[in-house]
Length: 339
Image 1 (cartoon, rainbow, N blue to C red):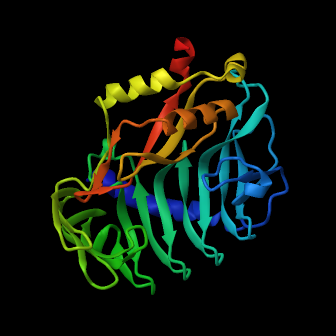
Image 2: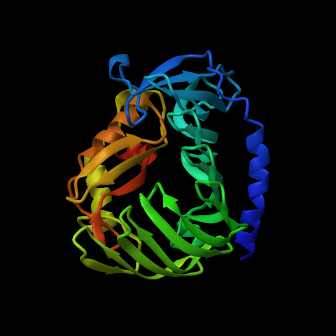
Image 3: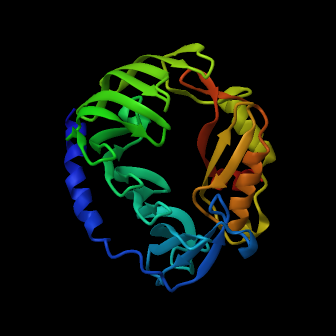
């Protein structure tokens, strides 16, 4: 419990850090890029977002950025990591798509939606969430489940309903609010930021969609209900999709398909591209995109290989077949020797 107590104390530090960025919002005057729905570079005619970059020096490790919707609304801003064009760390720098340090996301009406720090494109530490009406939704601390050994990927530090009434303070209280991530009205108790006792989720008509029992952040048992009222029993909120032949079969399929692009090899570029993709209810790979950028040719090759995979059986959420997102660190260092 000492680890979680320290996590809750860090929230006040986060608020102080965040206050230093209240001057954000002024448009940056560096280079401009056009991005598709997956934040990959595209033609201006096909763009969903327009990215404005700040100016940076050769010695910098990150670069400020702002992503605007093509309709003009600011969507998010923060920092992107800078990487060397070659294996020489002192060589020319280029902007990657890896989220680094603080990032702020906005609703279309201009109100803040989410703010927190990223490392290698992943949420780390305390994030502040807001409702669309401008009220603070809460402060949640994110961590890796594999290290925490829990069935929840963040702990609750503070939480408020959409009218501003505080429901959880310093990790203790009762969550009783609409959850936009679940699209359900969720209710449950927390102790030291962890789910405990009975948690339920209901739709807008009051129909029970799930009921779960927790002990210190770990799921003991859950029941969910589909639109026809059928009940499903489960002991894991999410079950990852399985590839034919297991992990060995997955890596065999990737290794057989990947080709190391010549322009990246001759430039001496190697490393990892984090790929996000969804395995849908039929086991098909969809919504493939890169979270970080290593080299345009390597990014494209990683997306091509993952998109070509066809050996998945679908995953489960709350006992029901569901679309599941997977993040895979695609390593080109290993394949550089093989190909």
